[in-house]
Amino acid sequence: MRIFLMAVLASLVGVSGAETPAAGTIHADQPGAKIDRHIYGQFAEHLGHGIEAGVWVGESSAIPNTRGLRNDVIAALRELHVPVVRWPGGCFADEYHWRDGIGPRASRPTTLNTNWGGVPETNAFGTHEFMDFVQLIGADAYINGNVGTGSPREMAEWLQYLTSDKPTALSAERARNGHPEPWKVAYFAVGNETWGCGGNMSPQYYLDVFRQYATFLKTPEGARPQIIASGGHDEDTSWSELLTAKAGLDLSAVTFHYYTIPGENWRNKGPAIGFGEDQWISTLAHTLKMDDFIRANAAGMDKSDPGKRVAFDVDEWGTWYDTEPGREPGFLFQQNSLRDAVVAAVNFNIFHRHADRVRMANIAQMVNVLQAMILTDGPKMLLTPTYHVFHMFRPFQDATLLPTDFEAPAYRLGATSVPGVSVSAARTTTGEIAVALVNLDPHKAAPISLSIAGARVRTVKGEILTAAALDAHNTFESPDAVKPSRFNGAALEEGRLSVTLPAKSVVVLSLR
Image (cartoon, rainbow, N blue to C red; front, side, top):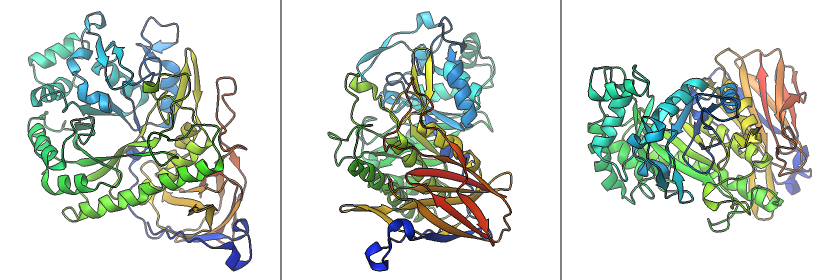
């Protein structure tokens, strides 16, 4: 996608940033790559209350449930059209032994979650419960195998247990545990963060480990999942480049992890709410690095894979703030504000631009952990601003990217400058043109003018998410404080789309 974001100094043109129009062209006559719906994926790790109390309450719970899975959470996720869920981790995956989570729950061992709070893990939610969960919400299964403390045999037997259609000991065991038929597994990863909590390996060492493990991942014909390799993070491109060049045909995708923090280091990340404008703009500046990271990794992968056979999957992304006072630090609970919604929308626009290589992304995480869609408290549940952005962007799932040339003024605070507006466009599966617009400036509205080449547009409608405060958020007392509403600030004038984009807002338009 050809986007040129140009900072225009107000002092040079004699007008304020709000009066300097942002303008560009949507090229409906030059369709690009498919925006894979799996870019809107979720991540659920055994961490804090992400699974326990967030997704799983057990059949005996007074909270309405289906086979132990919360009905309110299931309904909310179905409404999002969640395409894929990654499980069981994360760092937890490389200490997870799948046999601990099958069979009668009363007989399952209680183990220790050494990564997240050092708390007991009951293993009540295991393979059968996860596969039941993804089927209930209509999502694909993405399972992360254990390299760190596992073995090729353990991983191979797990995949056989899941997918075998032959009368073997493993398929018979699966039937005794309540599921005679094999499951469909869409994605299977060989380890997680093998550069860190997954084994502290070098890219060269992990390359051999991946090739070894992948050799033994066998399924019936037509049932093989996409096999995913554990890749790098932040500025490090060595993982994606080496794996793409050397891992062989077993490799379907290389992963990438990047978390947005407001601060300059992990010891002082900044609070989730109660922050100032300096942390608003620093958060946005840091999240915009995602574009640079994807671009650099894609360039390295292009050297050996110019046809883009191997995907670059951002299977952990999102905001990460300081621990909320009074809560268990290892549970990674954080409030979710308008700032998080803007971060999510900006990332989606970045993923869209790189849809030829980025074919899955999984926000961290789904419920009660980090940049969550949903927060729960006993029987209570609320939807976060980030949830609402995922809902607004549903038309982009499996849409076709439409390249956009675009210039906009910058938003500045002190020495920090970011593009004032983020934009992407696509032809949806139902034929409309979807346009996503994000105003990063918390003070000034942005007038925008867009021409649409190759399409005659007659109507426009839209939704907006915004609020008065930078850290506006939903609480159990006020669960609808931040939610989308109808947007009336767009009009068609002689074939051009004119939009007045309010400050600190996310807008998705549908053009017919």
